Image (cartoon, rainbow, N blue to C red):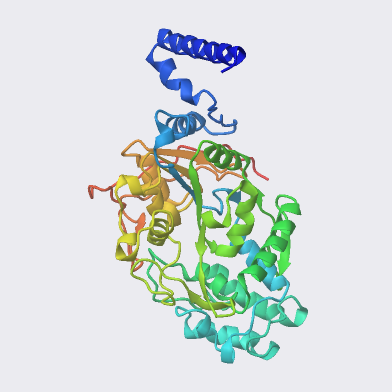
Length: 437
C-alpha cells in the first residue's frame, strides 16, 4: 500500500469519526435525521379555505417519505375523484358532446337501442329509434353533427343528461342506486365499436377544445346549447404533484370512461396505470362492446357495477390493493385503505369514508357528502369551496336526519354514522361569497 493511499484512508476515517461525534453531540433527533438529510418535504401553495392547507401539509409531513421511518414503510395511498374534484366541469360530458358534434356514436345492432343499456326503458328505446333509425345502418356512425342528425343528437343528449326522453318519459329503470348510474354508464356503452386508442384520440380533441374555450363558453350540440369549457384546479394539481413528490401512491377513481380520464390525468402526472374509470369489455380485436367489466361478485358483462358510490370502493380495493372476489366490496383493514381521499359528490362518499387519515370534500352542495363532512364525527373531514365558480351557500339545512341517504332501491332515508346513530341536519358553513353575474 502506498503512503499516499494510507494517508487518504486515515483522513477519511478521521472525517467519519468527526461526523459521528457531531451527530451524537447534537442528540438522537439529528442522528436519526442523518440518513434523510437529502429529503425535502414539498410545500403546498396557497389558495385553500381556512386551515385546509395546513391540514393537508400535516398529512404530507407525517406520511411522506421524509416522515419518521417512512423509507422502510409501504407507500401511503391517496385517491382523487376526477370531475369537479380535480377539474371544473365534467370530462365525460365534454367527450359526449364532442362525439355528438363529430358523428362518432354508432347506430346500435339491428337498430335496437336496448342493446346499449340493460336499464333503458322501452319508451326511451322507441324515442331513440324514431329519432335515429333512418340516419345510418346498424354499426355505422350516426350523423349527429349535421342538420339532418340534430334530432337524433337531441334525443341522445336528453337520455344521457336528464334520464328522460325529450317528451319526458323515464329513460332508465331497475338499477342499484349504490353501484350504478345508468346515464354515466351509457357514455362508454355508446363508444362501442371504437378501440381505446381511438377513444383517447376523441378525448384529446375534446380536451383541447374545452381548455382553449374561455370560461363560461357554450357549444351547440344538436339544436341546443351545452357547456363548452373545462379547467384544471391549480390547487388540486399542486396537491397531486406534492403528494407524488412526497412518495404517496396517487390514484384517480372516476365514473367517466377509462380512456377519457387517462387523457386528462396525464397532465397532472398520473399515468394510465393509476386511473380507474368505467371499463368496457372488448372484442378480440380490441373494439369496445356495450358491456362493462365487473368487480367483486359482479361478472364481466353484467353491467351492474361501475365506479360509483359502493362501486368505487370495490374497484379501488381490486386495483389498488389487490383484493379479489366478493371481499373487494367490503371495508378493508386500515393497512389496505387510502390514507387520503378527495371528492365532490355523493357518488364519492363510500371511498371517502374508507380513507383513514384525511378526507377532502369539495363543496357542491351534495346532500349525503355534506352531511357526513359537516358532521365530522371522527375529525377527519375538511371542506373546501369549489376553486372556480364556487356554489352559493345553501340557505336551508341539509336534510340529513330525514332524506339525505339514498338506498339501493332508491328509497330516501336518514344519513347514519358507523354506529347507526342519525346525523342531525347540517348548516352549510363553508362557502365563498358569489358575485351575481
